[in-house]
Image 1 (cartoon, one colour):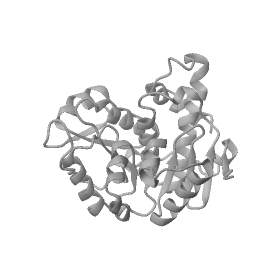
Image 2: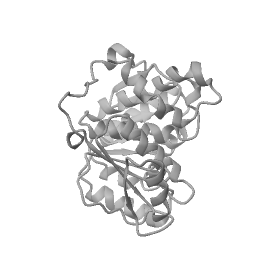
Image 3: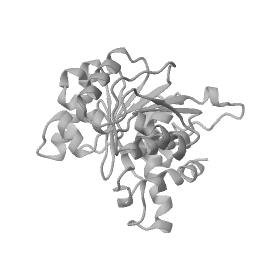
Image 4: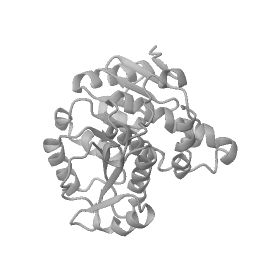
Length: 281
């Protein structure tokens, strides 16, 4: 069976870089989060706020027009760019070079959204994190796998993983298929679950933090924001995935005595990111 490298505090401290005393927002990374559609703006709000709370110097959200007020009011620290369409993303346009891009939370699968996602894959020069409906769009268009930049991070839950790699009949087969997928396209796969595993070719990492409280709406959107933030802060792709997953789980472990399982929500992950970082200091 695939055991993997255990991600405990000792392992994490090999990757974690404390913030330099003389840093400023211009060198702390600029993350771009692309997502949201009518009725699903919360997802990109969670991702964007999580990116900021994970240490990114600047965060821009690219959303449909209907999301402009929502993001500006709910997270004043985040900059907002809007699509020309009101209810969905149809033409991804920005005039700066992000240090990392996270795409997918709440984005939906409109045909125009699929087309502009393809255009982004063809022209993008930034490190990439792909989640949620952006993964589902990819699964429908498997030829696009070849357009993924090297070391792109994919963050599927079990159903999204199945759409990407096909069905499996055992845990062993699931890992074998994920490993060969990772090797074939030179991507990192964050296999969300209990526990979450990170597959980087033939190297597998097994996370040790987290609990059932994380099984809540928006939890994955927060993880996308955290990993995108770390990627924008110049962590190598696999390090960003490892650190993001570990800290994400740790927030639930820290919060549990206060919230219990039932009342823990995705915003509580964001609310406890600071304590998770402090536990590494």
